[in-house]
Length: 119
Image (cartoon, rainbow, N blue to C red):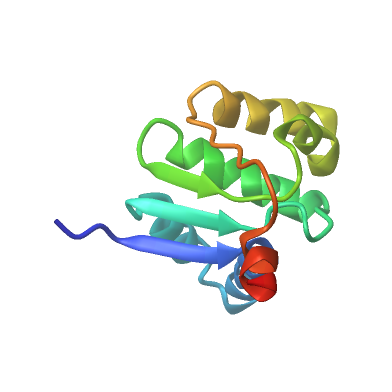
């Protein structure tokens, strides 16, 4: 069975949303993001999150909550995400939807890229 999947580095997610707003296709773009079977957001925490980014994350997470699957990868511990998101009210809402309905996998040990290079 095939599943429609979208993959974005977090910075590109923000850029695509900004471009869709400028082009007048934001609602269509958001519907595509909201309805795909799996959304992967990679490198969460590598770019600053401004107010527009917080609002976008909230909207995406809220629309997908308990409807479809989302994977978020990060080098930043989940305990630090609240501060990373910024504004407390929005951070609370996003984290509430993410943390309490998720399966968390925390990898331990040395970077696989580093091991590969050393090996």
